[in-house]
Length: 196
Image 1 (spheres, rainbow, N blue to C red):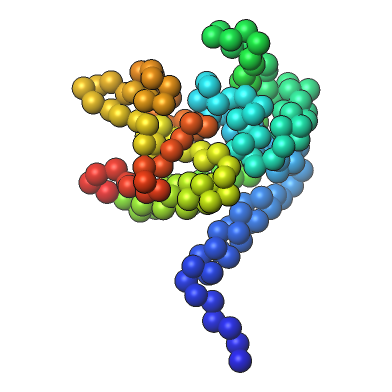
Image 2: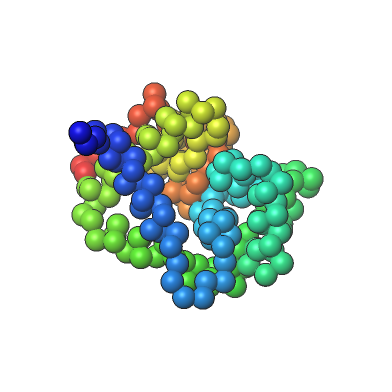
């Protein structure tokens, strides 16, 4: 008797399979999958999250492993270390021009292109669903959840002002769609934007 997978099992398997396909590179890739993930992370994270600890939490790895990956990209001239203006002991990492140019060769570009062919409402629902799954799993495993300010319970946007209650600060509009380590899904649920 064969086992027919239930929908949750099939969806989980498809997510894992998609992850493997996305990491499958053809040709002479200059970076490892972990280095690509690191480069993408520092391109997408907000100022307060672009730290070794932020990357370690996002990658669900140790700080030592994260630091080695960061160091390798720094050595290739793809990342640059910057001192925090608020706390001179803290550092954050930014992409160099070479790092930004390297993202033009990102193996995930094909996946992004395919997702871009979905209609806007489908993309919004897909994003909301994946954000909820990731946040719920992070909560169950007691690890940091990551998401954008726009999808976060701490976020409010009224009267043309974007505000983060967690940091008790107004947000620059350019930060709203960036990854944040202070992300919290509202009641474990994230809803797509209205009208989608």
